[in-house]
Image: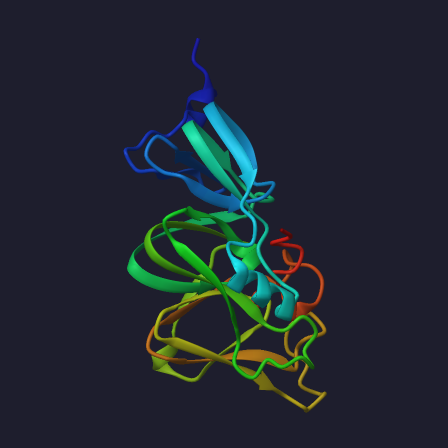
Amino acid sequence: METTLDQFAETTSTESFTLQNSKLLKVRLESVTIQAKIGSMVAYQGDVTFEHAGSGGMSRMLKKAVSGEGAELMKVTGQGEVFLADAAQDIHLIHLEDDKITCNGPHVLAFDAGIDWDIERVKDAGSAIAGGMSNIALKGTGWVAIVTDGPPLRLDVAAAPTFADAQSAILWSSGVSTAVKTDVNLKSLIGRSSGETLQIAFAGEGWVLIQPSEGMVSGNPLAGAAGGLSKMLRG
């Protein structure tokens, strides 16, 4: 008897990070320990252990205290395979080779534990902006998995002056600098949320990834793609 369930068969690969489909990631733990977003595990096979990853050192704890933000991560170790997802958002894999990317916290799904991370602030984002505008910088060699609400678009920052809504900018490459752009003209109602008069300005050499949505990250619009590490990194 023929069955259509074959289309849902597990995808095998020699890589440690493998997409099973656009919404589901499989990580092989035989040769890698990862950090993943708490609550992102949907299944696992084998002997797998999950533990809170903590703040990752005094320096990051102090930055968390100043910014009021962080990243709620869990350390995943063992022998087996773990399957990760986040609200059926699209998952994208990036392999860093001794490089750095900067990503808004809520869109980080998982990364190799060998990759170092830190909290960085957007230039000119003072305390007047609720929660600040902080992001996670990921640096090193290994896999990084991010999630987006819909298929993203990569913009060349050097090609033209580039600005993005605070909830739509997902991540950007090394060589790109950021600053806050303020539009005091209240008639300039761009976008859907209440943060239309504040955008992120991008400059330098590199790219920025934009998602076609403002809807998946709730709360203060500036605590979204430009930061939004709130409700993450408690520990």
